[in-house]
Image (cartoon, rainbow, N blue to C red; front, side):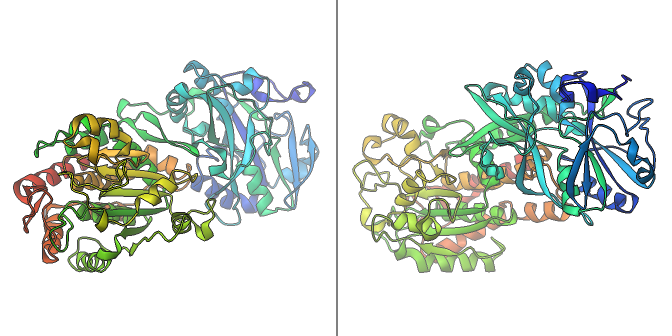
Length: 606
């Protein structure tokens, strides 16, 4: 143990500059009557408030962390709070010894403790390079309330080069008592932080070209908790002036980084900039699913349109979403009534079922002429147990240049989108000449409403992401791969959709892509690393009841066979053959589709 009882004599009290690599602790000292509530608050919010040690009442020392310590003297500077208001900052608490006899000290993990791990992983620590305290910000993320304690979470921010994001996540993930891995990567406004140059605590830290802001939960959350509770008297460390233990950071309950649980980062949006995280195991499972659904028994040649990880990134984005708009409907059979095909609606409902289980708002938009039929299909799907709760089915009509904006956003205000993700599955897409073509090159524009306008408008609105799912290249959203469609698909130069989505999922049959999305969402929300990141490091893991509910929403052979029976009831035909039966794209449900569904379930539940 290094004697630090007179650190206040140093001109720079930022303890990150001292004894690099030693575990540091945030400190909160409260009256004994509040101790149980605050301990519960720490347990419920373990990422910002990882509890290293709780003292006995009136205990100055902290034997498990630092031999010979005295909390009255061992922080360079303390904050004194009276009725929740900062009254003053002092270099010693010795004058408060009588009051401290009835108080309990909480030692909480600190991110300064993992900065040596970042350096060892080759990640530059910009605040150290610049000789500054780390930047800390209050967020719009509410901590989980416990007793009298509630407050917004505070985060620390370190700029990290994009190519080092995986290293930053992996090196800090294994030190949960120093806050663990990041809780957000990307645009600070997604955390309610308006200006990085104006931290609430600490110093502004400059980013270098190519850096991405990375946010970790921060123990200064304890100071905000004190402010919210308004105790008559309380003490904390002064931000940046921590208690230093005599233990190396990596020895404080480190996790073993097993390869399967290694965190991996993925960019899921550039407007706003947003990254997500999942374990290597979850990523491998989803990649296996993506490979399965790109099988091509119909010999369409769709492998030429395949882009790896589009399923993964689309589902990471959907996992972060709150409101999803799904569209489907390809009136390829222009000589029949209805002209729709059996590919599309089953996949749309499979996605909607899982999104509902994840507590997302879901709406389906389709053509006005097919609205009543699709509403009846939805009603029957609920009655037959294909989906638990009916999804609203609506239409979109273009009545002027702002129609799409008014539809997508409250009061037509781009800063208030109704939906944060649009998904098109087997939806006829607009070609370069403005027409809509089936795979035979027949123009079916007269049967199609301009739902493409929603996707083109969404591309101009920050915070709305789009996904297209297709099996031929003439579907809405597949404009992302239109060069490949024109080069490799029959009639490609004519039929290729010109409207690109952010993510383009290619499947042998589009329904399979919808099933894959449902399965991938299930996998992500069972992944502890993704779950933690999704919930900003707060709260408990998924309960068995929640897991069972979501498993029940996965596609099954029985549900999807029932779904086809419903479509046949309304005269919906197979896309390739126009057969009215249990067939999609010329492939009979048994053995083709049933086999894919069962194999998807096997991969998902492995």
